[in-house]
Length: 212
Image (tube, rainbow, N blue to C red):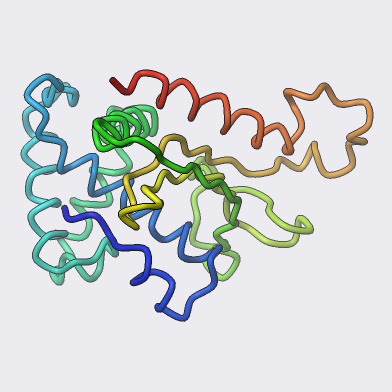
């Protein structure tokens, strides 16, 4: 996958918040599927059928240049198989995130200076709330009337070459109903939502510290 020049992103006319969220999601999927490092274990998925389905999905992503299921698969049975793949417990968020940071670390090799930018966005699925299963991973956002999840993304760029190198860290979460009325002044720092900024810096530092 070619690195996306930053000027292209700036000229898109979209808000920076949306750009980062969209790029995070797109890069998360594509770099997971595209990882071809010979030193990286591509048998990370335990089932051969899952690995074959992964290759099929990435082929469609490459062909359509989209990560939206109903755009990369026109037939309903195929869409269902893709949804089942991403819903499989063995295709974990940890596996996706680990591959993303690994890819980012490799892309930073041989560079004198990189810049890490972090921001938080929320993805709102309130209109689809009645269709969402209880264990979907979605929850309260915003003023607790919205339904979706938050994404805190740490994006690494090469400011001299104007290249997007990848994501050093990504954290996804949502608010629970119990947190709605909880007073934050008595909450430990590590449990506060604002801790995401510290965590993002620490995780990104760990990833970039391993760059030769």
